Image: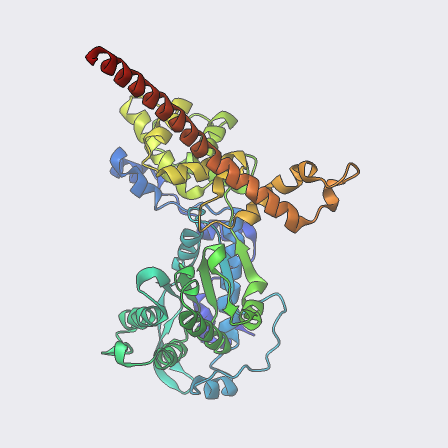
Length: 461
């Protein structure tokens, strides 16, 4: 399809190479000496770092995927094709017969644990595009405001109806519309869902991003059913979706199993973002090199493995922890009058960061690759990490049914179950030890009290 003939595509950049994508995504105000003269307050370092975007390989690949999804959606809704104009005014979008390359998907799932940077990645990529474009003179349409992308947070309210109302309010804010019902509590979820699809079609929405998707998809069955229906309606209307959230909450469950239709049409492009496995991880290395250059210090020594390892030990490979840690370490170095960040600054920054005990335990789990420390976290798919880190097979010999047992022949389900039990025992072992110690101390104190009482009785007699 010729881009010039399809006005909807004019908002998308023409990027052919990986290097072009890196330049397109990159943001680093620290490169500007003028900016640094005007922004030299150490207390604002964390805010300064929020303006930075480091185009790692993962970021570039995700950007290509998102732009391709928008491009495909606009190609299949090209207003210069008569059949698409007819479909534009229909309630349900009818797919045309344009050839579609098999590697494209109707939408995508971006998943990962909290702190891996998935929301930041998706938002930044979308924000490189204009959000609203005023169109005049489209075939059969005198005027329309094209919404290139829309991004909403599913956790902002309770239930799928709250999400639908938030989408309509966002549309109204962008196009000065009046789509949001005055009394949404009086309308059914299905009615509001139809209004949402109609509004997104009317304004040629290029892609809809739904963050914290698990907030609804892990809720009650009625919400899951309504959400599943909404996603399929959007996909049928050739409106791509990005579903962003926790791995455990991005499953489409039917009454008797998995919604194969929804998963089939979304799982073609599923991107799971993981914390770095080590300092040799390509994403970690690339990101940290870019972040290390973002300093207010007069001299920053060359990044080395010792510093990288210290950052890794303090963050577990989570990018979401690395950025604030780098800001605090840099601030401590500035306050101390040093010209560069030292390992001691990173250690002190790590000790001063206000992390909950549970988060510290999770970081240690990822540093040590110890799945036992992940037991008890309801938002972590523990079995996945038992398999990934190989604990199950390393422990297979311990559960061997015979002398001639070979680890690779073990029943994976059996080994996972045994490994999980061991992890739970490891987690509770310390508390049981404390209870045993407490009982010994209690018995000792009771014995001493009895001796004292007996001695006092003897004196009285």
